[in-house]
Image (cartoon, rainbow, N blue to C red):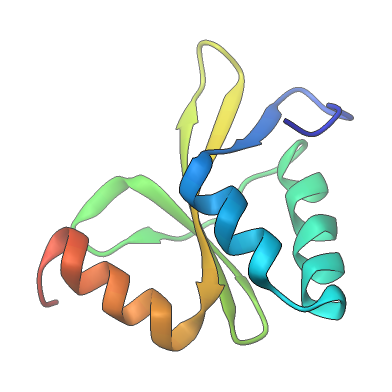
Length: 96
């Protein structure tokens, strides 16, 4: 988990930790900054047909996360590029 700077704690599940670790350093830094921003705010977009799954866009990269508002926790379960995002979406939720 990241050290909380805001009202939410942002954590990555095991898969997201592996995906995050596999990114090159420059991309990892950009995503780390976004994760820090998610401690304070969340994005305005959810997945189509999945209002419980939030999406954050960082250039060609995407983050999927869930929000537990009562516990003030955001759990990231996907970090990757847009192409992998599309494949993962179809695998998890079916075609749009």
